[in-house]
Length: 259
Image (cartoon, rainbow, N blue to C red; front, side):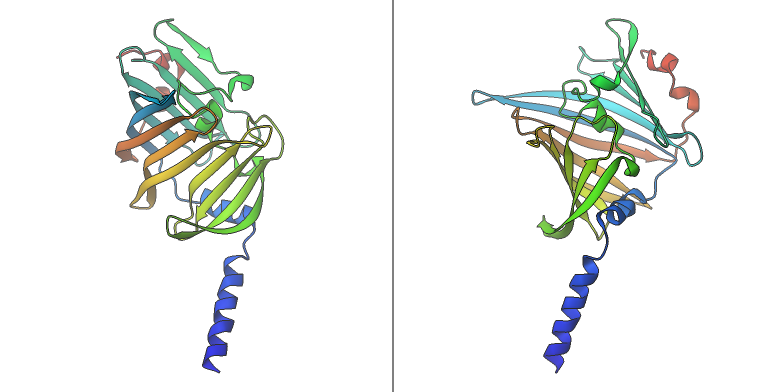
C-alpha cells in the first residue's frame, strides 16, 4: 500500500510540474523583480576560428540602464566602449517602449562624429562585430511571441522547461527561439535561435549568475554562431543597482559625449 501511495505521489508531482502553459512559464520569467537602475562593466571577448586558427579580440564596455514602472518607456540604456582604442568612445543608445511601438536605437561612431539611427531592417545585423544582433540587445515583449511548452529537459543538472517562442507578427530576424527555463529560479539559462530557413543559427548560454538581494545578476554568458564558427563571451562585473541615473543621461547629446 505504501509503495502504491508513493507511485501516485510521484505521478501527481510530475503532472503538476507540467501543468503550466508555455506562456505562463515565460510570464513567471518576465515577472522577476527589476531594479530601478543598473550600472555594470563588461568584458566582451570575440572569438573566431578559421582554418584551424583562433583569433581573439577583447572589448571593454560599461552599460547604464534605467527601468520605468509607469511610463511609455519600459527602459532606456546606454552602452559605451572604452577599449580597444579603435572603438573607444563608441556609444549605443536604446529606448525600449511598452506596447507595440518599436524600440529606438542609435549608434555613435566618434571617427565620423555623428549619430546613426538603427533602422528596422538593420536590427538583424551584428552589434559591433559581436554575435549579438541589435534585436538581441533589445529583448522582446512577452506579447510579441506565441509560446509552446515542448516538454522538460535536464540541463547542467537542472530539470528545465523547454519552450518554443515563435514571433506572432512584426519584424524579427528569427523564425523561432527555443528557451530553457530553470523553474527553481525562473531564469532562462539557454536559448537557441533559428534563422528564417529554420536552421539553428546561434546558441546563448548563461554560465554564471548570482542572487543580489531581490535581483538575479548574470555574471557570464556566451553567444555562439554555429554557422559562422564565431562566439562572444561576456563577463559582467562591478554591478551597481538602484544608484540613481538622470534621464538626460539617455539622450543623443550625451551619447555623443566623448570622455
